[in-house]
Image (cartoon, rainbow, N blue to C red; front, side):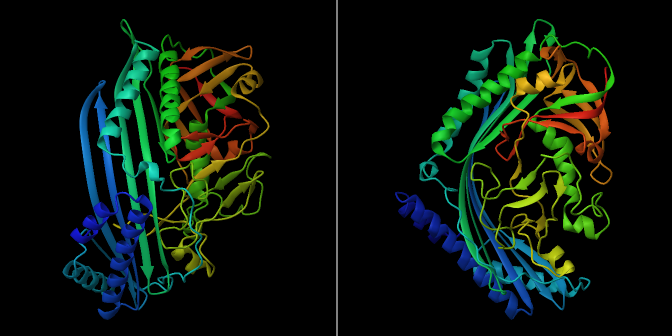
Length: 473
């Protein structure tokens, strides 16, 4: 950003809302200028997207402070179309000479690119401002707060159980402002602020080394930071200490497995997200391409995109193309309800975007969900689901591969527990899981009654899924 913008931020430091608006105005002005330069350079359509990021982070290794770092930066990207040919350029300089260079480069690249009739920008649509993305309480937070939070994570894990070795931990304060302007009338800006937390490690008891575990979170509300840090440490420490004394799974079988919210997202939700990309459908890469408006999962299973959920990191009022980001049902009560479209996919289909353009200022827009939320069901608590499982494997993390094209998966269940007689009886060594995610969606027997926040970016409940192949190692 310009020195004038930095000086203005400092002058407005006592008014966080005014400082955020000033940053947004500065970004919008740069975007508008760049679009004008592109049109004068020969572009038929132009879109500029800019971001400014301020981050203070503290990283810990083996329980000790490794690095405390403050980073400030800004980028602006320009997408142009000329005769339905795409050109793109980006820069981290905002002076006029740099913007002129970017405009000429993007137009020159467009001249050398193949034409595509779907290469056009979306028209402007009304965007409602999100509430509560940038809390005033985070405006002054910086490196000291990040270091204190990181130290708290390490101390908390050690206090829970002296056998826990914290391999890595981090805490950061992230503030982002973004803006977009296009020749099609799109004009929007927004600011966000987050505290990020993570911790990883294992428990050591003599010569025994327990299974590695990782936990993370992202929080916007300053009142939630301390509770979130305590909850993060507690969840991490309980799982990590509980991994000691792991034994071989008591049997191999094909049948019910209880999946944590994290594992449910990795194994069953991620393939659905890939398959509901309109681009994947249009290019013949979606396993669900012929299943729209059909039942693909058990009754009661619902996957939503909730960019209006301000407790999730991906929340926001508009997407990478300035289109409104609104709640969207992908799967509802087991039925496949719709595809996600960005501007390009929408142009191919001759319809409006669903507001699912993703990305930053350094590349052209991609496509994806913003803030995934799997709705809770009637399965009750984790303990209720354990009783319903009766005998078998409880999986807290999955490490392996899931092929979104076919749905086939194979990998290792980690931080797992064996269930016998409807209760958790002990930790299990890494155990092989395999199956087909799309086929098993129809065999979701029970969905837990609480959708937990996962890594601060998604919500999902525990779920009991039948028909999984379990191979004891």
